[in-house]
Length: 213
Image 1 (cartoon, one colour):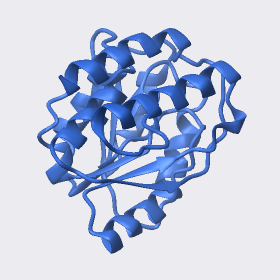
Image 2: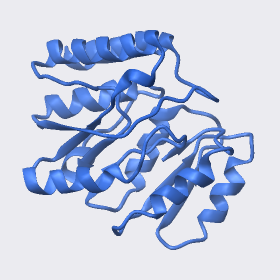
Image 3: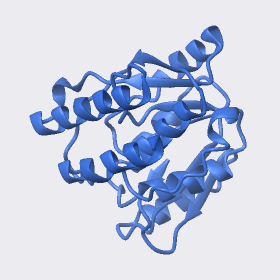
Image 4: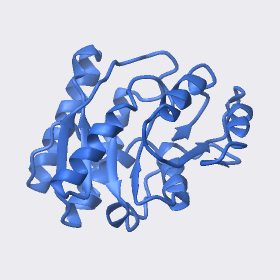
């Protein structure tokens, strides 16, 4: 879970994760927050099964994910944002699909109806471009909920520092030959303290092209 200035929601989302009916390790990466998030994470870091790491300077979501994946010890990893747009209970269904289908990668597909029009258009466009470039059919490339086996995530060696990391992860998984299985998840767009903007579509498009060619 990458965290940057999420003091208002971090308690709630961590508690939602802790309610999951499965054993798990929670890796929290504070990306140089300045709003008190670091102290909150350190309190959770005293608990078993919780790993807290700190970046001394803000490096971006991609860098935080790279740090988290390198520290993860589990057989399966899944990304969780620190706001409340997603419901971690969907992890149970995603993991079950992974077991039944035998796939290495499961993406949670959002209903984007709650998003602003420009954001919804951008998400759909990037998913379409990904599908064309990589010869697949993805409905939600930008989803946060990417569940991956260790075989899938360990070789990723993430380079992108910001939100273009979603494109990098997807591109590298597809180029490695992994089939991405999709399933619907719960989602409600939120715009308080939102870091993502339509301009992030530019580096995302560049990442899709860069890792394709």
